[in-house]
Amino acid sequence: MYKIKKQKSPRKLCDELWAEKVKKRANGCCEKCFSTNHLSAHHIYPRTIYALRYDLQNGVALCKRCHLYWAHKNALEFVDWIKTIRNIEYLESRRHSQSKNDYKLIEIMLKQKLNR
Image (cartoon, rainbow, N blue to C red; front, side):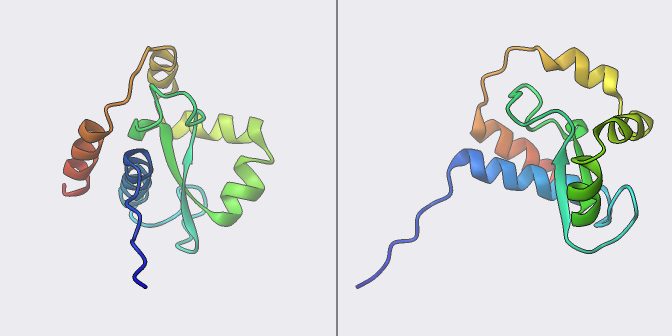
């Protein structure tokens, strides 16, 4: 019997494209310690804030160690550090924007940015 491969949801596809672009922007290394091992894309403001979920300024590339054992464990230190590399005022101004995600449009925009 053939198993039908389930297509990714538009949201999951956009999440993956966003993470890929965040890591590409960081040249494939952790923005904190410059390691290239186990890189992940971390949201500065939670992804539940839909106005910022796919905003590339809301992402930072971190290795597993910096992501799990620094950013999540030392939130105040992380916030102080992130202010030195991102425009927090911009993110804060967009944070409360009403946003309805058009995943097809987001997918197109992220793919264009990945190809740059």
